[in-house]
Length: 143
Image 1 (cartoon, rainbow, N blue to C red):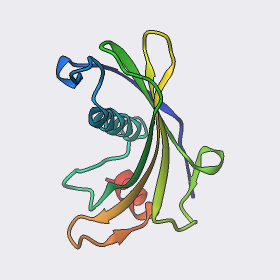
Image 2 (tube, rainbow, N blue to C red):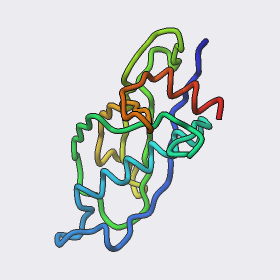
Image 3 (cartoon, rainbow, N blue to C red):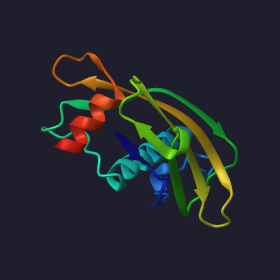
């Protein structure tokens, strides 16, 4: 069984509290924008997360961010793509990690301000043990 996954983009607005003393977005806030992008990706693909019914939850296990340009006050887009061959996840190939490529794109001119590679692991909520991508997909699609 396979699941086809498509890139998702979400529009966000920089809040005044997101800015640091230099007037651009604080680097730690960018991590929150990336998380919002992954949540939008899951919503778009109808995958449930942190739901009482779903026993397996995704957690970030690694994130690598390249800050390429200052992010000023204004609108931005967060683009999220799952790194899977042919944009397809094969439920028969056991994997313990999913990988995403994310970009923070300035709404003013479309330039990429930050790019991140994110690894996500999956944990059983009750036992706190490692699960597979396939466990998560089966649980969240079935819920």
